[in-house]
Amino acid sequence: MVESKTVAPDDQPLLVADNLGKNYGRLVACRDVSFSLYPGEVLAIVGESGSGKSTLLQLLSAQLAASAGRVSYRMRDGVLRDLAELGEAERRFLFRTDWGYVHQDPAQGLRMAVSAGANVGERLMAVGWNHYGRIRDTASSWLERVEIDTGRIDDAPRTYSGGMRQRLQIARNLVTEPRLVFMDEPTGGLDVSVQARLLDLMRNLVSELGLAAIVVTHDLAVARLLSHRVMVMKGGRVIETGLTDQVLDDPREPYTQLLVSSILPA
Image 1 (cartoon, rainbow, N blue to C red):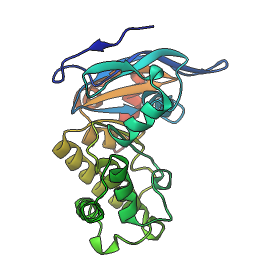
Image 2: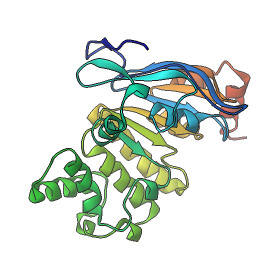
Image 3: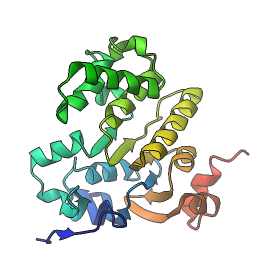
C-alpha cells in the first residue's frame, strides 16, 4: 500500500493519475495514463468516440475501479489520498463538497420532478445549511448567475429547455464552491447558438471561482475555449499532451493533426 503524504496547499497537484488503466476482459478501455492536475487548471481530454476519454473521466472521479494504477486527490487537510482507499461515505462526501460532476444529459445530474430552487438548495443542505431563507436566496442568486429567470425558481427542470437544464445543473454543482469539477461533454446535444452561450458562461464561472476542471469532449472548439491544457486520446492511450494552443495550433501526432484538420474549413 502506498503511504499518504502531506503536501503544501499552493503549488502541489490537486489530483494525480499514476499509470491508470481499465480493462474489460481482453478489451483495454484505458491504459498507462499519468498526469497531475493543479488547482485552478482546466484540462481537456479529447478524442473520437471509443477513444477511452469517458472511461478515464469515470476512473478519475472514482465512479469506476481501476484495473491498474491509481488516482490520488489532495484533501483539504493537505494529504494526498489514494481514492481507492476511501470508503463509500468519504467518496459521497467529496461529491457533496469538493467535487462537482456535469453530465452531458442534465437529467442525470438533476432531480427533474422537484423545483429548480430545490435542486440547488439540496446541495447546500448536504453541506450543512439549514436556514430556508438563506438557502432560497442563495439558490435565487445562482439562478441569476447562470442566466435563468429567478421567477422560475419554483418550476421543475422538466419544464426547462435543454440549455436551461444544463445551466441549472452547473448552478447545482457550483453553489458549494467545489475545488474540482468533472464535465462530460457539457455542450453535447445542444444547438450551436446555445452551446456558445453555455461555453461563455462556463469559462467565466471557472475563471471567477478559480476552479480546477477536467472536461471530456470530442469538440476541439470546446477544448480551446475552456482549457489550459489538452490530452489527446486514441485507443485508450494518451498520444499527445501539452498547452491547449500548442497542441491545437501545432500538433505533433498524425492523429491529432487529423482531428484538428477535420474542424477547419475546406
